[in-house]
Length: 487
Ligand code: NAP
Image 1 (spheres, protein in one colour):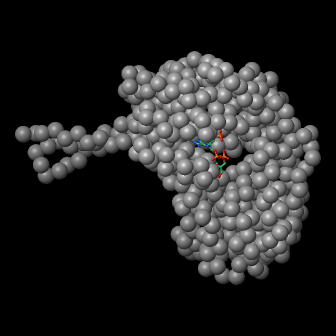
Image 2 (image 1 turned 120 degrees about the horizontal axis):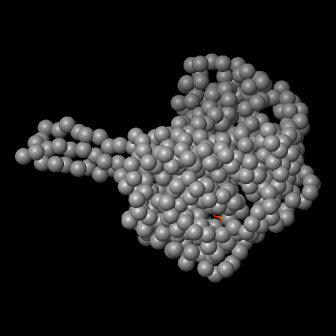
Image 3 (image 1 turned 135 degrees about the vertical axis):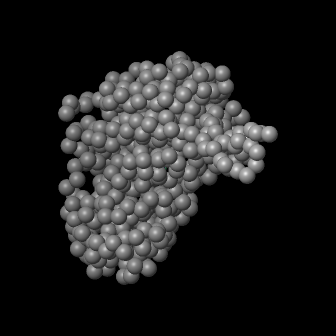
């Protein structure tokens, strides 16, 4: 495997109507390397005028352009080409995403970039089959339905998985024949700009994908409110999602909302301990805990509580933490200083609430980066804010339970419902408990098993709508019925 080094980056510009351009107001924003705290490049800081231009380009490309009227087979060919180019330019994408987010290069290669290529391939295949249906009814008519694209999709994405989360919107939206205006997170905009280049090279026509870097309250807000946008596909926090859904709702725009999470992993007394520990660690150190589908609450049967805490403390100490460009690194820095500060605040709250720090509990001072040691906290009551709220960092709280009912009640006790999981060797219990967990996805005896064919999304305050799977493609289409008189 070729080593990846920190790339030198040219300043980023907006990508509108197939061309690179400066923001109308000529304002720029710094992009910071979270592993050093230093500025690595700048990107254009758009405002509502630039957003107008992007929506106009997407509108024109949809209303007049060929994309929505091309055959599914042609769109499939282009999306497969996107996947091919992602694989060809893997090193470049790995370097940019690692630098921007502080993700270890090994993780970026194995997960982020690989997944992006697979998602494009998956929706390339579905693009060929997006279809309506004929109905036989007892009238002298021929009735059928057509699946049609919605029009212009406004995609708003968060900082933690920039490439995967933009792909999970762009791939199905494009497969269905829509055009897109994408606003990436202001902290991590770089892979979206590189992908704009790749999409154009693959043959996505001008105006079909537009990337507008800028702030949520300015560009995101303008996108939510723009009358030229037909759907909002949002991933981010529950607080901003609630605002986005209600704003888009005023204009009756369909929305998909992929929001926050705070999942529990239940370890029953008959669990395979190696698997349970492996899943627990994966669930809170993966992506430095900045993982909506993380499992930051470990619920352990009381008979295993002491043993599991002891094993976890030892195991966590051995997970390599450091420079994301070192191929051996498993945990990189937090993506930004504000995320690090948030983790510190929750650990302070946990201690105040009587939590016992079993591992970690402090920053790591290294090269000026935003590092936090993986942290395990025991003995917290269920009402502590450190248990109930989304910390979004490398922190695991561990609680004990006595009965299956109690475990399920604790797992379901937060406002969130994105993911959940359990460890057991008892098949009947696996099905029984999976059915009772309030979550969009339940993992049994592992954590974070995902594939573009498996729909994911939340319930409760984790949102609604599904990404991946045929459900995602459907959400970028609407049904039109055509009824022809046979009289
Ligand atoms: P965030 O603060 O909610 O931001 C998400 C996006 O919304 C960003 O692009 C942000 O722009 C934009 N935004 C902010 N204010 C806006 C406004 N008034 N109008 C329109 N857009 C606005 O979330 P984050 O901190 O980036 O990401 C972490 C959160 O995302 C966590 O809660 C995590 O659980 C969730 N998440 C969920 C999933 C899922 O699949 N369910 C996946 C990943 C992450 P700026 O960057 O410019 O602020």
